[in-house]
Amino acid sequence: MLRILNSSSDRARDEEEPGYVIHLPIRVADLAAATALAGTVATSLGFLAELDAGETTVSTADDQNNRHRVFCDLLLPDRSRCPQPYDHEGPCGEAPATPEQRPAPRPSPGP
Image (cartoon, rainbow, N blue to C red; front, side, top):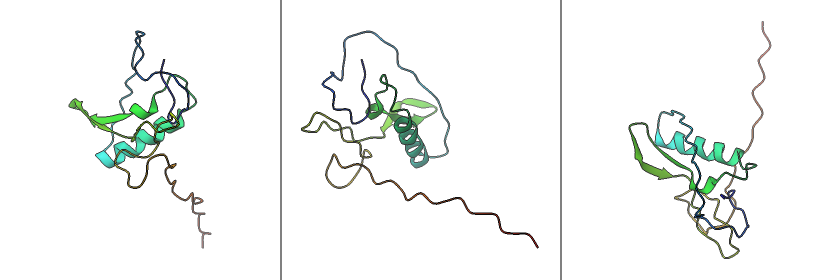
């Protein structure tokens, strides 16, 4: 059994039940872009009870054993997990700041 990012359930992180891990390769140009996209994908799939978003990692295509964590995932006093990025500044537990949503630019009227 797995958990959703920042879930307050009391389920254990490392269940002894057998299971499978889904690897969904998505090729991105650099580590920063890969980390940002992985965080977005993991967060957007938060409705899946099977998802353990806090364990999201990225790696280079040719060295998949050398992984970079996406989320802090530190266990908090309320038994939830820190949803901040792995190398965040400030205290754990605060929801990450989301960038301001800006409307798409409108096409300019032609001559």
